[in-house]
Length: 340
Image 1 (cartoon, rainbow, N blue to C red):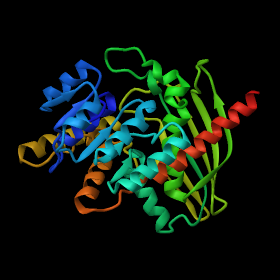
Image 2: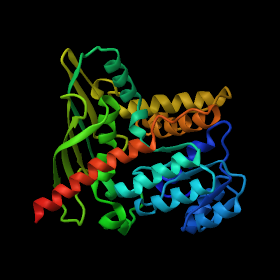
Image 3: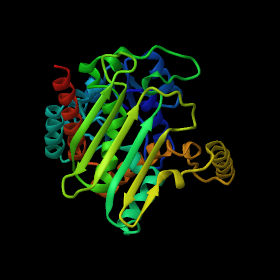
Image 4: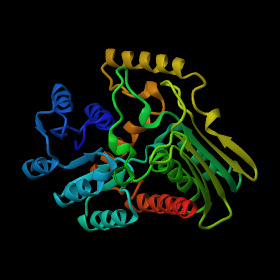
């Protein structure tokens, strides 16, 4: 584990529930985070991931969940150490860094993937099957949106938002590279490669980075369009999640709203009860099933480990990460041109 923030702890917990997977080392600058890892049975702890990579010679995989500006160096270091790499999105902050990572991953001969978790949401997988089966005809328009607290979300005990979130050089941008990244990936997941037609970035909180964004995409190979709407400006209380996808075809439509649980609290209670019963009869629990959307993080990691064990190519490639950053970088260039 490289990085033990919120996402790092989530991935570590998921690994602990998987057969044939053992977390043997972790690196983080926070002593408190390392103590949490120790409490979960991780024995080899480091404050510097470079030291971990140089000393731990029996590793197979690096799971990287660092702030955006550290992605390139950490991925490069892990690949050069001969490890398979699972990296949280974005692949990197710039197109240039993404191209370098893609070349490094290709030349390494190791498995490499990025955490495009929304592809692994059960409702999204069902919608993909609906499209591939031709049930709604040819796709015409996709509406994809996610609005919630963003970095302002906090646990039970509020904590300051890390300063890198609001430094464009370190974060790469605001809500577009944070949430918009996932929705651009979903457009590509359903349609194929895409181009940017229009973008509008908002600064409701007067931050150095955008806290709202709308983008219009078009398929690189057809007339299909997509409307992306993301924001950090809405207070959402877990387990509610303001996320939806609507696919409009020329023979019908399908909406994620019609597939996800109608009541997340009832869903959480049902899945929690099932996990209790699984423990009683000695079966593996589904650790994040009660959250519905969060289970996608377990499923994407399980997919990656399966690819390593069976020598398969991961569903998400370095090229996928590059193509998304190309679109995002163009939107940021448009904003700069409009402001001058």
